[in-house]
Image (cartoon, rainbow, N blue to C red; front, side, top):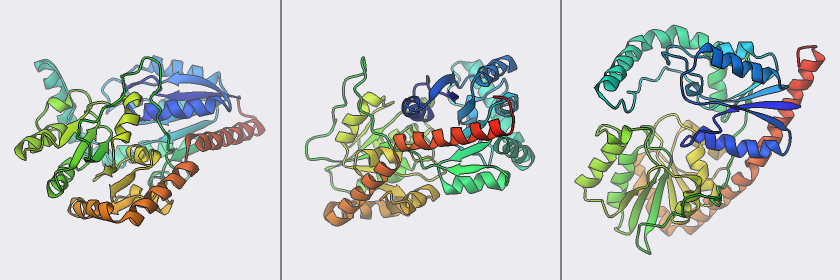
Length: 393
């Protein structure tokens, strides 16, 4: 059985790409993979027709999906994924990383020259104008289509599964918690390891992952102001594109707060972190902070779990569900409760040790090897069902 594995495996600086690379390594030991590379560039219909032809030479399709990997010209008004699914003749399994309930209206980063910035302004205005009608009419129809067509739909949480079913009650939804993995950082030609910028004896708090508006960086900085001088903050990640140059971006707001409160010696922002730097970063980290205030994934939270660190997270649907599954996260309601939890961790060894132990147990249950074995079982079920039904290979 040959599996067409459609993913952004060749992209750098992309969380789904990192996940896909790790998963494909485990899958390759269990089945034959044909890589179908995805990217974030707009393409015409001929490109997606060629993708479908490549998929149809295999036995099963596995897609690692976000909407940005299926752009057509004039995206987000035009997208290719529904048409691609309809051209595929073999059984289809799709992992939806970010199911959408509403069309996002984020200002496009970058733009470069005056013409580029003008194009971004026009695109943003068009999206904002079309958003109410699109959310009410187009998105429910489109979601119903792309969730109903695949033979298997995979999401990482139960609340995401309910979200998919709200659009497509007939969707064959399966839940597989986001796997936890341990980047070793020992690849040939990788950058030298990370060196801590803080003095010995510091208590290092780390917010891991891309800098975006889903995280409450200002809340973490305000908590840092309430903690003793030895507490330091490491923001281990960078911005998307040229967004860091904008004063209104999360990066810009963060740096302005740091300057205004004279925190330059207590805060460091690393920029983009390749896998080679992660072991050193996590070795320098005492506590991982996951200050999510919007819908989010668990990749950056899993990094703390992977390295057996205490993880303090804002209470969200995802973090509550992870704890019901035994992740051992230390949940706070928001920025107001963060300093108290940090003080508790310093003095309450049983709290800290129990959280780390539960995290290790969660990591052992939800690693990439176990995830790959489940995917292969689903491939075999789909392939067998199609063969028994007399469908094309």
